[in-house]
Image (cartoon, rainbow, N blue to C red):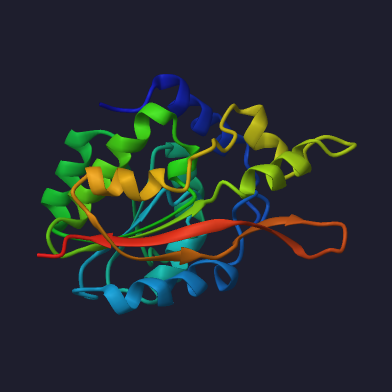
Amino acid sequence: MSVTSRYREAWEGFWREAPGAPGEVFWDADPALTAELHLPLLTPHLRDAGLPLVDLGCGNGTQTRFLAGRFAHVVGVDLAAAALDHARRADPAGRAAYRQLDAADKGETEALHAELGDANVYLRGVLHQCDPDDRQPLADGIATLVGRSGRALLVELSEAARPVLGGLAQGPSGPPPRLAPVFRHGIAPGEVADDAVPRHLSDAGLTVLASGRAPLTTTETGPDGTPVRLPSLWLVAGRED
C-alpha cells in the first residue's frame, strides 16, 4: 500500500510554494527547541547508537542537519521531492543524505532497510498528518526500518492540540501566515486519538519502551510574541528481543 496521488501532490505543492528562509514553515522550529530536546528522550533506549539514523518526514532538513552533527550517518527521507530540493540546497556540504521515500509503501521501506540495515528513526508530527488509512502502513514501515536493533522516537500532536489549532485557524483574520498554507494545500493536521499511536506501533510488532508528554514548538507566535507550542506526546519504540 502507498499513499494516494492526491496526498503526494498536496505535499509537493506545499513544498514548491514554501519559502526557503529558515522558520517560514509552521513546524520548522529551531532544533534547539525541537530535536535537541527530543534526543535525550531517545538516547537512553538506543541499543546501538552507531546505527544509521533516519529522519522520517524530514521536510526541508532543518532537524536532519542538526541530527547529522550527533550521529555518524543520517538520512533524511520525505514523500515530496520538492521538500528534498529545499533540504539539499540548505545542506551544500552534504552533512546528511536525502532520499525520497513513501514510508507507507512496504516495498520502499524494505528496499531502504536492505540498503542501510537496521536504523534508528526520528519522526516529528508525521503520523497525525497522514490520511487515516495510511497510519498503520506508516507504523509498519517504521517497524521495517528499525528491524531488530533500531529504536524509533515519535513526537505527535495529542488530542489536546486540536482546540489550540482550531483557535489559531479561526482567529479574526483567519489562519496565521505560517499555518494558512497547510490548510490551503489540504494537508491540515488530522485528529489522532492518543491511545491510537501506541496501538499502531503494537500492531506493527513494536513495543513502546517509554512515553510521555511534551509540547511541540512551532514557528508561529502568540499575541505575547512567544512561540505557539502544541500539546504532544512522545513514544520510544522498538523490539525487545
